[in-house]
Image (cartoon, rainbow, N blue to C red):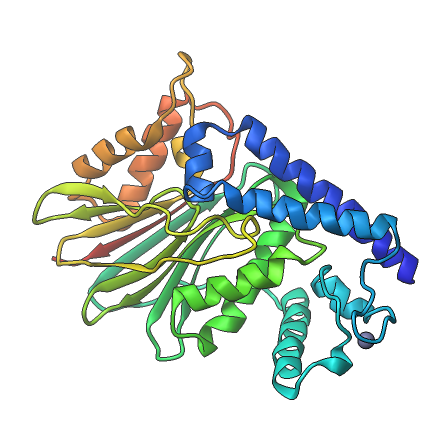
Length: 339
Ligand SMILES: [Zn+2]
């Protein structure tokens, strides 16, 4: 059994290295800037940890306890392949924290995916999601924080198909499980990054925009972990601003220090969240639909209801791409503050 887990860690680390290398080689500079949040060293750090672990597997030292020199528990390695101290040597508090992470991983695997739209007075909400394949790697969800504040999230896992879809559902459940005990987006994402970065089943990375919305003050507090910047329409100035990344994508950075930002919305303002399936649509001249066209369309559509806004974006973006079949998953969420 011990051999089996080290083989699996080896395969998984090779796969992760390959996926991230492929991303670095093929992604455009803009995409790289967004996903890495201007911090290219974070990937080098992570590669360093991966290579060090692969080397340890080669010379049979991975998972060897630094204190008693036995092999640390397989369940612990499953959760974090860099674990190097047996659970027995941890303090009571450290052990409790680890146990809650382990319980969480079980809940994540077992739980079903929730599907619901929140009812927030004075706010109109619409969402749309269409996978490119039967199972998609995109996801959006609504949830509540500890104090009852509304939470919303949109995310995009690099890659498509069944494995991307499974990863997405595990992330969705992790967020649903953590949110009722959390106060801020940063707290949830820090924990998720810590949980997934050394998890041997997590071979890729995920871009996530996670926000907390207070319907009384209309304040949106968010962390953008390498996700396409959501667009905010301000009715007073009649312009669109972008909520730029404030952290690298989940699963890329060893040291994850998310910056929390907030924006206070007013009556008549709206927010549009989307995945790259919306903007990365190419026309016959190989031009991209892109953020500028999206902003222009958003500005022209401020009189529309939230569901109609999403319809308009969907229509224009597919018309731009000559209605070709979907290359990527496509997901959008619109929030409109009633005037
Ligand atoms: Zn030990």
